[in-house]
Amino acid sequence: MASDEHIELAQYLKNVHMSLRKLSLNIGAEKAWIEHCNKKEVLNKYAQCMQKLATVHWDPNSNNENSEAFSRIKWTSDFCEEYFTNICSVHSRRDMEIAMKINVTLNKEQPFHKPYKLLDVGSCYNPFQIYDFLDVLAIDLCPVNESVKQCDFLNICFGNETIIKNNGVKHLVENSFDVVTFCFLLEYIPSSEQRIKACLNAYKLLKFGGLLIINTPDSKHVGANSKIMKCWRYTLACLGFSRVKYEKFRHIHCMAFRKSLNKEIAVRWATIHREPYMDFKIQIPQDYLKIKNDNNSEKITVDLEDFGELPFNDFEF
Image 1 (cartoon, one colour):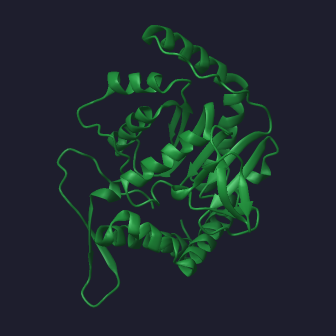
Image 2 (cartoon, rainbow, N blue to C red):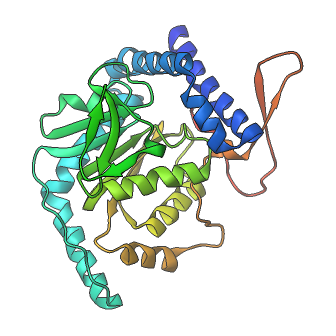
Image 3 (cartoon, rainbow, N blue to C red):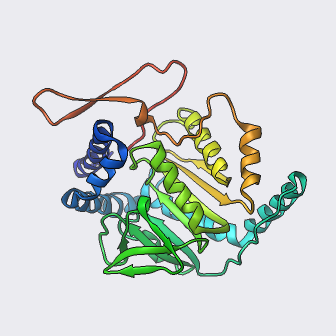
């Protein structure tokens, strides 16, 4: 059972998410994001709460099947090592076979060597730094410590070299990372368009054959939000990603996507497997919530609208 402090910390995170979503509805997601990024006190408290929630309330239970945060870190690190050791070449051969069938030219797969270069987006406190086989660049809107660099990933600039000044990332190099991780990131971002932009930025930064790993919280059973997860897979395929692993745990979805050696290989999958409900969107259950303010109060409440057969249930965050 969660302690009072655990509940209080989690509630603050949820309130920040909800406030950002409400602001997005009022002034638009782009303006809301800019305004949100300027709320230094809110961002700082959010980062402190996230670090404490993870390191105090989640990490000590890392071997417990109910664990949320640390399990996502271990799942990601374990799969990275397994993928680059045993799995990457298998998917490269599959890309070659499909490329021959649809008559497209493959981009050259760049070599992957330890330590694998990993970009941890929305890192907060740099949990991946404990792994020697990973060369981590941790970025966040509001870093908790100096090992994390300040960066707004939605508005990152690309250049010929990585430039970091005053602990802030100014430029990153395209096709230079082995892994990009989004651990509890996409549900923070207020609109589908911005989530897609984040994934597109990850695509630009990854080497061909590299991994985009996404962890997103969900305490519902595996089928409750299955249509949403299938839409994510479809949309990411349209961007050029092929899903190579998926697992649903008690509180999270863990997914790994490979940057295909040719975008058309992933697009082909999306075309063949598209179902009528699939759109080019990355949505979360909160996108289907009606948000309102109580009179004379800053408290935010939500009303779930009727969506017929679509099982849109709320995520943990």
